[in-house]
Image (cartoon, rainbow, N blue to C red):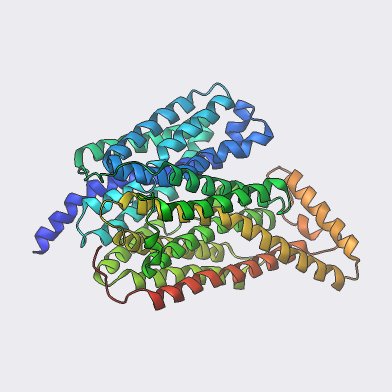
Length: 511
């Protein structure tokens, strides 16, 4: 029996690898472009107002079309849609390597985003259809572990390759992964049944796409102020589109999304968890960028390497978490993963300091990574187990939509909290030194201007924040970071409590 079980698991490895590689493209492709965006922008003379759009265009397209991809996969075949997406991503990125101008590259990012939309929820849906219920939790653990290792290693390798060869190599990563995934998918991933439906709910798909797209745009603009039209207008459009989507889905005979799913407590908790882990990881990037570069004077390369230590160990623990989900239930694994993320935030809150030891920062990032991967393993199993027959693609896409929403909220909320707490700290610092609030504000503005002009240059002084206006702004910013991390750590604790109370203790039967 153990031998036959081992052989069965061995036969699923090519399937898991094919699907994990496809999903990894959706994470790695935008990430490596963002990390190397300065080189690409300089080479193609990208106007400053288009730099952010170029970096985020593929993600915006995915946000708008994620539910549409799930519906199309259920209606026309998950495997067919996945392979089509891999081909589109390959072509778009190879053409991107030949980009003569930023306008051409922007068009290719739209095309790449359309291709990657098919690689979001579809791989997980195919995983559910390709392995048995008993194999699925462990398979999800391996799926997540492969993604994690590649996301930890490939950005660093790409950075070195760009330094040696040039910016065009950025667009070679996705095609390499796509070709391998395409070959493995064609050979090992089985064809899945097609859900026969009278028509595609175009209105529902359009409304949810509009809501997600407007939400991402509005939250990105919110970093420059909530009262600006660039912020409140898209956020208003998002709310209106979401309300119209719910109203439409309740009335249409064949909805894009069965809203009855949201009445199931495990499903709701899993979506809250996926929002939380993406919210925290996106916010962590903001904190590392602000605190790591400005206060600790870490280079971007060093900040990127903070994610590498312990990668293989975390990958092994993620695989183990998948096995534990299969043996017990998603509940204890989800709770532990969320507790890890809360512990990471509390560790940073308690130890952040202008002279903070690098090993403490690495430990916090390690705990965040571990917690997010363990949580995502249990979340994916919970969501897939709730998917009605023939709707795996749609349900998996809902999980990704909530993840994108969390990833969009993270930077905005973290920056808002950082600004509020930083202002409180430097005002207290100003008062303690006998300075006026105006003098303190002038010192802060001078420091921000000097850092913006000097950061990354040869003349950057790590102690710059301590030398402006007599204020210890480095310590003030560190205190603001600590308060921010303490505040956001409440969220994973709350979701962990909800998971413990509302989810079943034993593994539920698959729907």
